[in-house]
Length: 364
Ligand SMILES: Nc1ncnc2c1ncn2[C@@H]1O[C@H](COP(=O)(O)OP(=O)(O)OP(=O)(O)O)[C@@H](O)[C@H]1O
Ligand SMILES: [Mg+2]
Image (cartoon, rainbow, N blue to C red; front, side, top):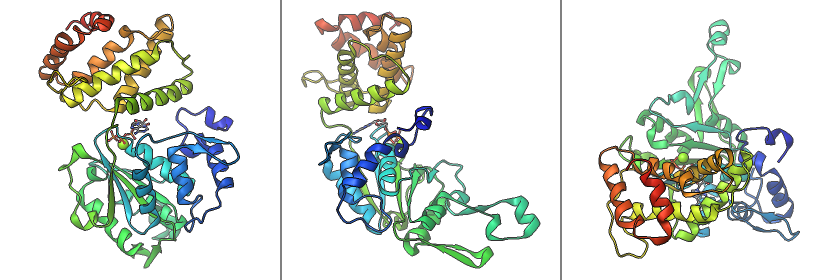
C-alpha cells in the first residue's frame, strides 16, 4: 500500500493490493485477453490467493468455491456480461470490485443502482453551462462510467442492477448487444474497445422490485454466490475481514476474539437455518438476513468497545448488543424469536453462561 492509500478511509482494491497485483503481473506469463492487466489464471489467483513462484504470497480475497470464481472470470473474458447474484452479504460487491481491479486495474467505473438512477448514469449527460453556451459538442458531453469503460476497454461495474428503473436497465441492452452507445445529438457513437465488459450485482431479496427484463437477462451469465457452506468457512471469512478492518481502524488485536467470533457465527448460522448445529432443536427464524457482513460488523464494533472501554479482551458483553441488534429488526416478532433462542438454546449451553447473562442484561 502506498502512503497516500494508507491515509484513506477506504482505499480502492487496486490501491490496497497494488503490490500483489504488480507481483502477479510480473509472474504471469500466460496469454492475456485484449486490454487485460492479467491473464484469467492470474485473476483467479488474485481472488483465491496463492503463492507465486518467486515466493510472494497473494492473500485470498474470496473464500469459497474456486470453480465459481473461474466461471465468473471466464465469463468476463467472453462477450457476455457477468451478473453476480445472491442474498445480502455474500461478497457480490466485494468480488466485483476485485475483478475490476485485477482485470482493468480500475474498480472505480461504477454505477450505483437505486430507484432514482437516471439514464445519464448509464449513457451520458451534459454540462449544461457549456451546452447552452456552445451547443452540443464533445466537450459539453459528460460521459457515464459505462461510456468511459467502453472507450478504455475496461470493466464497468453496476451495483444493485435490479434496483434501477426498468427503462434505465434497458439502456444497457444496446450497450451489451451492439457494444456501442449512440450519441444522436452529435450524430456519433462510442464503440466499445476490446476488453470492455460489465460486471453487475443484484440481490436475491430484491427480486420483484424491478425484475430484469428477459432481453437484458439473456445478455448476462449469472453466477450465484452462496452463503458460506460451513461454520469453519464463515469463521475464517469473519476472522480475516475483522483483522483487516481492525488494522485500518488502528484497533489493537483483542485477546479472546477467536472465541467470540465462533460464537457470533454459530448464533447467526443457527438462526439463519432455523436449527441448532447439532440438528436437535428447530428454531424460529428472524426477519433479518444475518449476513456474514453483519457478523463482521458485530465483531468489529465489539473490538472497538473492548479496546476503548474494556481491558482489550473481547468478551460476551462486547458483542451481545450487536448480535441482538442484528437479530431483532422487527420489535415484535423478532424479539420473541430472540428471547426463545436465549431460553431454549443459549441457557442450556454450559460454557455460554457469560453470553446468556450479557444478553439478559439488555432487558430481554
Ligand atoms: N465468501 C466470502 N469471502 C470473502 N469475504 C466475504 C465472503 N462473504 C462475505 N464476505 C465479506 O462480507 C462483506 C460484505 O460483502 P459485500 O458487501 O460484497 O456483500 P454483497 O453481497 O454485495 O451484499 P449486499 O447485497 O448487501 O450488497 C465483505 O467485507 C466481504 O469481505
Ligand atoms: Mg453489494
